[in-house]
Image (cartoon, rainbow, N blue to C red; front, side, top):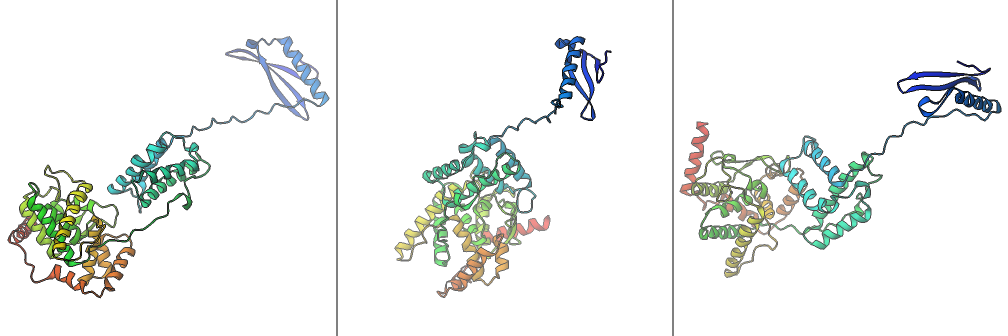
Length: 418
């Protein structure tokens, strides 16, 4: 191996052939550079010439060691909204909820509705880093123009979009959350709460539902029993439509709510005597087994709440108002909804003297705010209606029907046998 006065050539044998390098002192340190390989055309003479040029640069003070840059990782590909939202949804399903133990079945359905029906059709194929504030505003305007959602529902969809983009910022897919902030939301207009809080109106509505049952060919008695359950047990419509006969114990006087949209909604409702009569008469007529849905279709499947709204409540309200008009009596409150009947239950409990904590538990409220609001309104009444509500559920003129008494006795025998 040839040497120079201040450096020497290094030859290494590799699988690819000979590789030439040079070792020499420069600026007070030993240096080594790789010059090239024989496969690239380097020869011993060419290496000697290159080494001489390097040493000349060292003597002139212009040689600089080559600094190898650290390898730069290839940038991550930003996912589409659909891809990222699907993973986010799965995390929420398993780890979401108030206690971090996962969403309830109703919570999953609600979140899936916001994503599948309202967010994905608009943002599905867009990359996360391509979504702009203008896109968010355009989405909001499209929903307002469509007129299918109220301001509250649109704001819930926007809140879900913001939560997804907030997670994307934590994963460094986007620089900022373009859906964040109140400016992105619609002003919420809270409609006045409609409540069926007059005994005369409750009776008129149930009687109208009973008339619909009498005219029906199938599921007679169900319409009145369903509305009575909403009024006298305070179940949400989703809770009522998923209720099974095994959850109804007329002997003990309880209803077990097992499927609810909140943890507080899973509860045991103590059945008022008036409702026990209604359900007893209906069960005697329904003749169903314990695993059947209480308010199922004629084929045993679950009803849809929109059908109950249009085919039961709306028609019952229409007939009730017709009867009230004949009697020259004030009609039912306008804007009556299935949820209005649930608030009626709270008014009834306060009318019979129950305390707010008990009412809150029976209603399945997560917070006391709504319970106390109904309580304040009920206690401020001076029209004698609380007494009439109490008489409706406790009145001596109401006696159990023979069929309901038989069903209660049968439930009692079944419970003892179990």
